[in-house]
Length: 294
Image 1 (cartoon, one colour):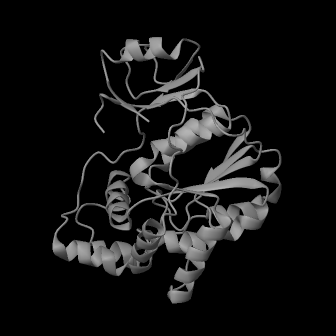
Image 2 (image 1 turned 120 degrees about the vertical axis):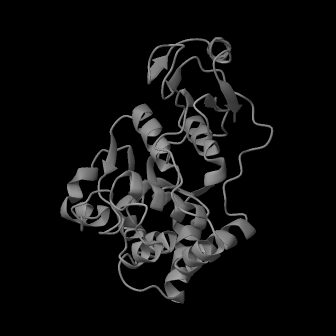
C-alpha cells in the first residue's frame, strides 16, 4: 500500500448488535497492529496483553522475554472489566475468555516469515547478514507460529498431534478467522456488529524494505520450518473457514468516522474522530488519496 492509499470501512446494517467482549489472538506480522490500534481506540476499556508469543521472538535485544501467556498467569486480575483484549497470547488462555467473541487474522506462512525476518532487521535484533537458518533454529523467527499459537505448544518440538490440535482449536474455539489478504473485511464486520464509528485508515507498522532474497533455496528453507503452518493455511482455505463478508449488505448511515492516516494534508492530523457526513469526508479525501472501499 502506498502513502496515497486509504482503506475505507463504512460498515453495514448488521443482523444483530453484539454485546460480548472482544478477543483478538494476534499472530505476529499478520497486519494485526492496525487492527489493534483502531479497535482499541474505538472500544472503551481495551487492554493489550504485553509480551511476545515465544520467549525469543520479541522485538527487544535483551532476550528471552516474559511471554504474554506468562504475564497473564502472573496477573490474572488484569482482565476484569475489559471490553477488548488483544495480544500475542496462545490458546492456552482460552478458559479466561469463555464469554468473549474471539477472532484472529491469518497470513500465508511464507509471506509471514519473510515479513518477520525483515522486521527483526529493522528493529536491529538481527542484521541482513544473519543466516535465515539460524533465525529459525534460535527462535528469533518462530517456526510454525500459527500451529504453536493455537496448539499451545510454544517451546517444545512440534509433531503431527500439535498440528491436529491447532486445527481443531481454530475450528471449535475461534469464532471468526479472517484472511490477511482481506483484513479490511475484519474491521468492516466488527464496526458493524458493535455499532462503532466508520473507519478510514492506512495500514500501520508495514516493513519498509525487503532484505531477503526470495530464491528457491530460501523459500524451501522457510517451507521446511513451517510445514505444519503451510498445511493449516491450505486446509483453512480449502474448507472455507475464512470469514466471508455478507453479500448484498446495506451500507449504514453513520456520521462519526475515525480517520487514521500516516501523514495527512487534508485534516492536519494523524488520528482524529470526525463528526461529519461520511460522503463529505470522502469528497474531501479523494483529491489527495486513492480510496479503497470495502
